[in-house]
Length: 563
Ligand code: GLC
Image 1: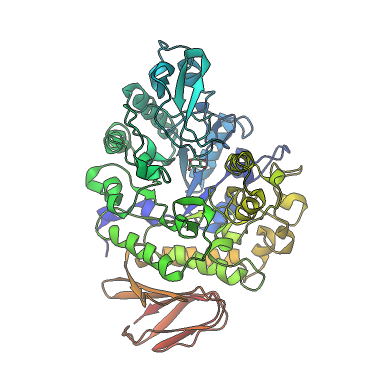
Image 2 (image 1 turned 90 degrees about the horizontal axis):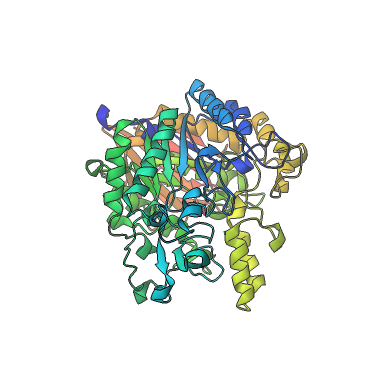
């Protein structure tokens, strides 16, 4: 049914993202490690997923939990050794699992030897690896930084009397991709890992790598929102294509770029196969839906609407209908837990909304990415004190508000829903101390609801658990290739309670109904001609009323095959 050349393992695979710091500790230091991932490989295999994306495991002072890399070719000692890494890769290959690593090359750590050298003097051989602005030219043109307490991306550095650029924290200086040596270094790093047998990279803020090194004044319109400016560098596509020619086309690997600032109009520039750049990327349209306009860290005051949620996914599906390929995710290490965000984590709706959301990701076109714990419906921890937080993003924004004399209480309320730490709490394995994550006190608090069923061991025993639903739903995606490749068509786009769509190819058709409502809800599908429905799966033991009109129970999800 499919032309074989269009079929790809990374289109058909289900991705499972692991934040290693929080997955499984085997040494008793309260920090997850690679041996921990190895110990859990049978579990991961039992999920039916195919690809593991591992957040950064390289040597790092952990200013931003591994996104500040000091050595790209060695493993962070807290996580283990290169032998552990090799054993992990071996264990994965044995189980038919693929490994995608994180490639963080918009910036390094300030403790990377390139930067240690670069900052020494203006004539150091590594000087041109980073962006420098000599102090005698005055204050450099405004650039915004994410994790800087003053929001300033230029940091004055005494030894060479110059400013360096850091789009993230002061300990994350931006690499200067305009220097061909930097690009060669990146290519070599990629080859190093590919030669070890790694199957791909998730490329951190890859849309930011190209910069105008005349450093023009930031146009006024980008002052509130600098992301579109950062993601529109003049040579971005030249650099991505070069990576393809120099590295990617020599291996059977996958790439997925993290692409803040990239909208529908630019999507195909990255993933149109003929352009030879990336395979997939993560857009931020969904992640912005429940946030204030242009403020990705601030919860939106009026709630998001299902029609908006549908519009985003339908538009993105349409972009990739003929070329390229999409990626589907509802959360990751930078955003709160999906069930708390897009569903409800209250006792009465937790199971249904968590499984409904899983059904969604697994019945859309585009590769589905699940984040560790999503398969058991892990929820936001909602810290109430600043001292519980570990994330530099929350901690530094708190400092900024304090400095400005702002409302820190309001900020803390916002972070209960918005913070990245909501998604970084330890994996909940069982009901023993610390949820079985570690024998000692974990680096960040465990969510107490591991005692109330949100843990792997309890859910493995329960046929009707979020976990067992997940496994069955993954199997269904695998059994019905049309759920991967079939055409998507939205039905009843104005419906505010039910998301309904079909996936079809040739004479085969599937109908997916997802209730986002806490009440019963009906949808009229008279427009859809069919004779018989076969229910493949539902997250409710009561079948909905079917016919021209369907009536679903709260957060019910159903996948039908139509005849
Ligand atoms: C990406 C990562 C995030 C990190 C940032 C800086 O957005 O996903 O965790 O803080 O880049 O590297």
